[in-house]
Image (cartoon, rainbow, N blue to C red; front, top):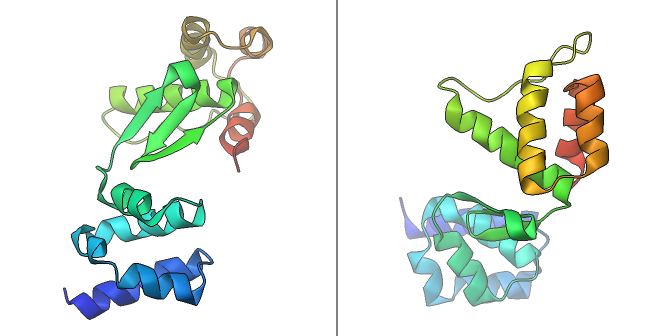
Length: 159
């Protein structure tokens, strides 16, 4: 993998993130870039787009590819980038990740729109109660079950 191709990819990600040409030139000439792995380039450009300093963005690019949940602050950290979320969507994402760890094959898929999932609703309710979820969301799951529409709404709440 050549250095020039590396720089080209990095510029591609930066320009896609809306970074101006002067800042791109400064970033590409920074020796700290040399220690960022290729797969970290999109993370650096995302951190730059979010307003991180160059040093902090390079640290994000070098961070491990890990997903961390901080329930006390309703924060998900992905590859070193913290994302603060409202409590209910945070709990849904936490629950999704927990399901993924328990399932050998793939991710949890939405229930049929014709038949709500009551078994997984019970698991999600337990998680919500343990993590201090909103009573309205808990009541809705208790009475209506886990529905595709609600799952989709909570996934999109941070877009």
